[in-house]
Image 1: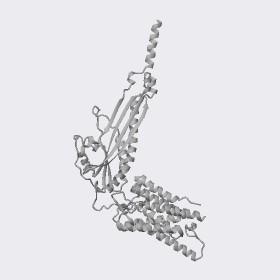
Image 2: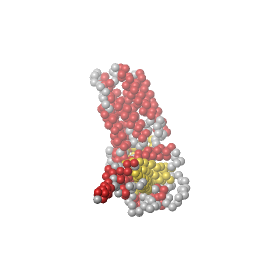
Image 3: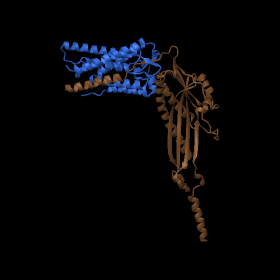
Image 4: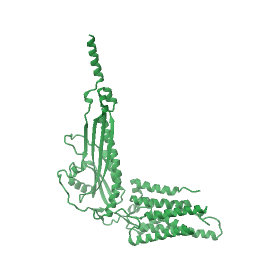
Length: 288
Length: 207
């Protein structure tokens, strides 16, 4: 009788303290990609465009758009994109603001995702050109890889309480957001700017999916900030490059368009004014 | 007592703000068509806009240093020089350079400040005179070279759609020369009428 009671008690303790086996999460990997290569060259793996010198007609008309997300084999087609349309528009606006800094950019069109066909190729880009009246397009793509695995604290999942309290999951989110600027007519890549981020988080297995979604959002946020910084630099470098090596890109002005003007000060003026300041300061001191 | 150059610092802060904010830059840019369409403020604010990091860096550095020297002498003088040069450069570019669709930069105003300080130095004695005359001579050679060749000397324009507008510097230098001459004549007239009063900003100069 006593042995029977002990057995029942042990079984009861086991039920209360032992976690469910399903709480154990083996290492999982999830990838969200909107591949530029897949979009522009969908069927032609060995495709190479003929080399042509791009001719940019000033003032430029620029379009900015997101490359459609690519569904990986085995992924549901119902799965929503990693970025909502609102988030995409926000990032595209930031990208277009960078172009807007340059007065030689006449118009900037933010092109909604609905106008880009998955694997549409340059045929789709040509359609956008005539639809939106653009010469140059900045295509923004992304690649996000989320890896989740258990760490040394995951043994605590043997208890139900441990699964709620002990962060035994390591979540790592790698994000790359890439802006590539193409001259549509010559199909030549003018320049590109990447944005990268890595988010490392330790979490409990409870609400793991929500945690991963938050990490994904955070990863995109940091990568986008990095992209904008790099884009600003790359745009300025591109302007210098085409000035220094005109054989790379030919610049043509539209009839009636002359462009702008500016005065050019340099180190000589800075030295001159510095000299005036130093001499003024020391002559005044010696007079005192 | 040395005075902090508040106005120079404030104008430089506006220049930096126009660089950082694309909306402000778009709002301020001197654009011929927009001015004709009634956006008159661009006539004055266009000088705050810069087109490249090097353009911003050199213009701001020269304006900040030269403006601080002028403001230390007299704040009224700085305001007068600032407003006169802005108005004169914009008017000159609008009427005499109709091919320019847009213009930006503090370089014309900075040149006015630099030349004014150099003129002030040139009328003193010793090292100050030597430095002042050298700066004026170099500035004149540079402007003559730029107007002759349409190419920038000692600096580069790193934008494919923008050309050199040497007229802005010439107008700036002319404004400085005119204002300096006017002040000098006014000062002379006061001295001859035996008034001990000082010219605006001349309180730190040698008798």
